[in-house]
Length: 308
Image 1 (cartoon, rainbow, N blue to C red):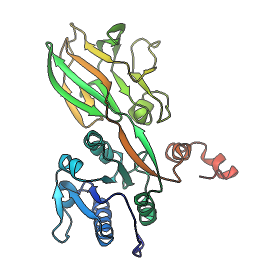
Image 2 (tube, one colour):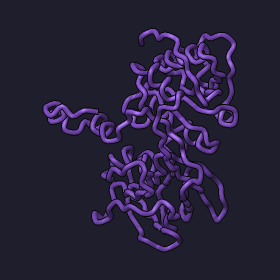
Image 3 (cartoon, rainbow, N blue to C red):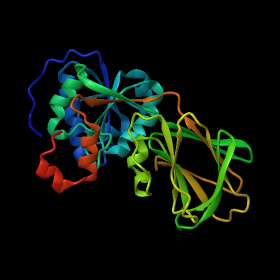
Image 4 (tube, rainbow, N blue to C red):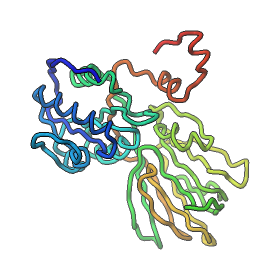
């Protein structure tokens, strides 16, 4: 990373939270650069506890993620999409916008790169950005009619069988209306944001991020006519484990939180009221991201010199 010269930033964002796992040395390096840069610019900079753990910095302002949501004006998440998913589930509930800096692999959500870190962060903090609003899912797990778990997800809520791939049966309801019973390895309930994640690998379609839709994508269904279905995002989805289920299914939220399920348990899913506010560079181009990350027509892109 090149050394940056101090830039004068006139920003409406005064308090900035920096979030990033300390286990990756590249993440720690970028977090350290950001902390020094933004502090030199006069910002009130706070570090999330995990981000501060491995940094040798002067005494810094450190707090847990949820506390930063009520304290800061914007969050900068350093890492991969997994880091952003984790931060989004908390910060979306505080109406805090997020900037993603990519230190992971694919980086569909973390678009600012280390090579353009100085200019991109400066531009965004100066108000030169695109703001995207991505909705999240809210899921509730009921056992014997009692609410036992609640969580949210930016990408998807997935019903699946654990360590061994094994069919199990479950019922799908939309707005309390019975849709079908399925025998499958599971079901992915995905947002448009999550349509380029697990759902894509399971054969689901890509949905533009601004669509107000949900995708229900079966995982290896026993009946091959059970295909992915797209429904209105304001619909309420209920997944009920069959009474005769002998397997040990689970439900996951963004692949990061998992809860075990049993026969007759229900997972109720609806759209979260508070959206994620994602700040992207002005140059952000959704289809360029798809071409780059999914390696669409690499040879043709090169021949025809498709621009960003």
